[in-house]
Amino acid sequence: MAKELYALGEHPPLGEVPAKMHAWLVREDRFGEPLQAWKQEVVDVPAIAEDEVLVYVMAAGVNYNNVWAGLGVPVNVIAARNKAGEPEPFHIGGSDASGIVYKVGKAVTNVKVGDEVVVHCGTWDRDDPQAQDGKDPMYANSFRIWGYETNYGSFAQFTRVQDHQCLPKPRHLTWEAASAYMLVGATAYRMLHGWDEHAIQKDDVVLIWGGAGGLGSMAIQIARAQGAIPIAVVSSDDKIDYVKSLGAVGAINRSRFTHWGMLPHWKDQVGYAKWLKGVREFGKAIWDVLGEKKNPKLVFEHPGESTIPTSIFVTETGGMVVICAGTTGYNATVDLRYLWMRQKRLQGSHFANDVQAKGVNDLVIEGKVDPCLSRTFTYEGLPEAHQLMFANQHPHGNMAILVGAKELGTGISAPLSAREEVSAVKLPIHTPEEFYAQPRVALSYEGTAAFAKDATKVRDILHAGVITCTPAMPVDEVARLLVDYGIHAVVVLGSDGGAEGVVSQTDVVLARQGRTKEQIAGMTAASIMSPSLLTCRLDDSVTDVVTLMTSKGVHRLVVADERNGRKVPIGVVSMTDVIRGMIGAPSDSSKCLCRDAN
Image 1 (spheres, rainbow, N blue to C red):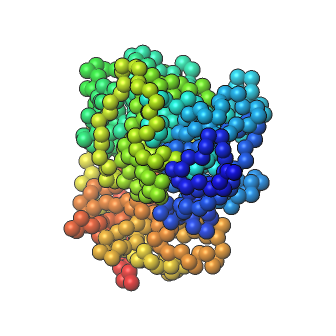
Image 2: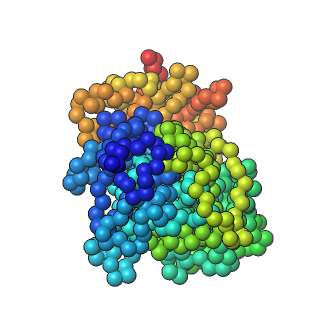
Image 3: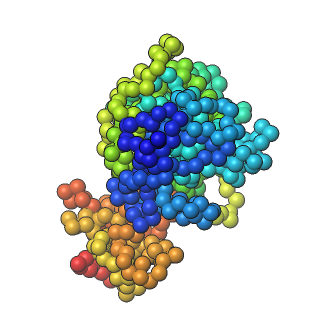
């Protein structure tokens, strides 16, 4: 007689499916950071449909989507599924897995009980018109990411998947290594191979942002396997050897450049010229790596807001920037002159179809792509792994969780036959880090315009003093400050007197959206503030301050003094102050008073 529940690591007889299973769950009443959101529970093993497969999970990969699932933002995945008719009041995440087939639906023909498989995370309704007749199912309205948008992912003893998601497990890999690469690997494969004439070819230069990360490490190897020339962008010199070991011909340390962010307004001649100088220096760094003046045919993007202007600029005429995320923000700016006149392409990309998932899996089987597994956790360590990712303290490469596998290093059933196996060096865990005028069309690169010098400093025009609050101040009290003082924002000070963030009128009005008065009453400044506080210094030039404000789309900056590593706010400078300075009007300092944050 079959047992109702097996202990973790205790494998049921092949093909025997118990009634219950151990699983990590998120429920709505504990949405929050991973250590709070994820709890172990025992639940029913899910039933499968005729085109589905039940896989006994040996190991599971870790991805940021299940940090989002635990937070309940940007999407409450439980509520979304309940609205669609699914009854379960919980979420079992996990969008990468290796395991063993334990049960198949009657229509399944591609796998059988006992097969060792890896699982890709693309799901769709097999009756969706977009998933039939050779069309790309990635455009199907029914497309969902398994283990994030769907339930019963890999963070449990058994996972329910569609038959086409299953691919052969590379026999030379451990269970944990086999579970770690598919989501990022298939995503990178589609970005590099999925776009017709822009699919990478031999000797194409490919610029890869975040080369030491999970996506970037896959992209470097996939490009190298095609005979392309990958160049990695990294955040520090200590990652250069790592990306070279994966096949990059060289690397560029982005921390050596300061032109990142949204483009200065094209009417801001000084600011735009400064940005242009920075982006040209970055382009030269590409040439220096290559030893010749050759631009990338394809740029592999995912930072987004901070880097898209640069990516578009440095791409070769007729080339493509392909993007799958926006880790630095979503409001990317593009100088359209370079896009249309150089006939460049900005292409969005999302995960992969079956053919592309098989493409990267084949490269792994052949030893041409290494999973870049950097750290493996026990089953009990699942919340910790996601907490590290939430805090941006996770190691580079990919992480895995042991589920059915009892210990590290198991699951290898044959040696690697290919002789070009990737051998990546190891990295330690890192510490965080509308227009109405007709624009000018000319794209002259020659000469440098001469601009009038402006010696005006911030200290000459600022409002002295700021209105502040503590992180614990209730939102309604912050709102009262904004109204009583007739100001647009309040600076949030920490216990050490340093600025931790800012609460603007926009932050306050967004806090009311979709919430009751009672819910708002329980919110504090810390819960709604924008932690990225834009500041300037007393001796900064007004020219540079104008460029910063216009490029970031803001009308004022906090003036801060650096004291023992803290940014201590001492005033505010606004567009109005700049205009007052232009006409010689006195600064209206009386309207910005200091206030005790307590």
